[in-house]
Amino acid sequence: MGDRVYPKLVGARLRGQMTYRVSFALECLGQGFAQASELVVILALFGQVDSLGGFSRSEVILMYAIASTAFGIADLVAGQLNELPDYIRTGKFDVLLLRPLGTLPQIVVSDVRLRRVGRVAIGVVVMVHALGHNDIAWSPWTALLAVVAPLAGAVIFSAVWVVACAVCFWLVEAQELANTVTYGSNAFTSNPITVYQGWLRRFMAFVVPGAFVAYYPALALLDRPDPLGGPAFLGWVSPLVALAAAGVAGLVWRFAVRHYRGTGS
Image 1 (cartoon, rainbow, N blue to C red):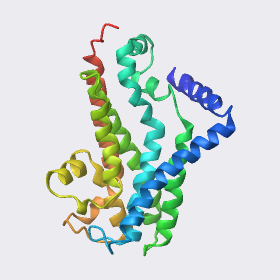
Image 2: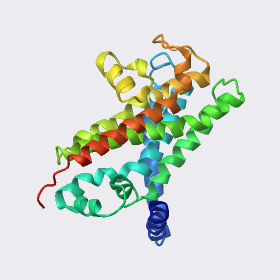
Image 3: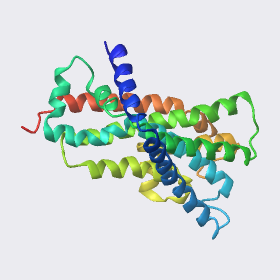
Image 4: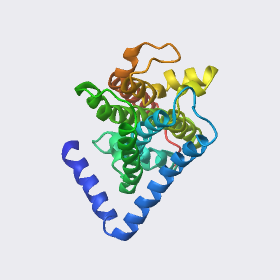
């Protein structure tokens, strides 16, 4: 049933948003400018330093581009989960449980905001620029990695989004905590993990796992050894990490829904 219902729901949402095309275009531009502002910060930083964490400006921009493209796609797909506290607080989530459809897909397709494409577009443009301004030994494998890396990163970000928002089943007003993990992951992955120290790097890089969004794929594209001593194959395993993250997110969501008791609204 879902394979027929979900495309119709998404199509209806998108047609509704395209009704006012000028407003839609302005919202896309706003999302693009918001994403580009992060790039401006990186460029301003390199006006004061020659390298960041041992990487040049072009190399850091490549990591930023992969991370921002991945996060833009994840925001487009999973950003609606930010509304989960409202669903729980108002009892709308109880309505979802009565339907013969998965609760997670129902929330995901409930309000697909196409204006977030502006973030993805800026990320893709910057990534094309970065790929052309870095010394990359192009081969079928590196070309495939350049395409797959942002997609695998989007799956990782989406999985993080699901797990972080699932906390709201126990702590209804925990959206700010969830945002710390989701948007914090975006900020973390936009820079080389070598600039971070101690527990933060280990947690955000390997527990979350943000290092596999942009850092390790960028090292593989640049054919650079990891300054932290990690093996070279880590740059090629992002799709496997994404599958594992999606599996964990699915298990966490199912566990949270099974223990959902409602708020009495």
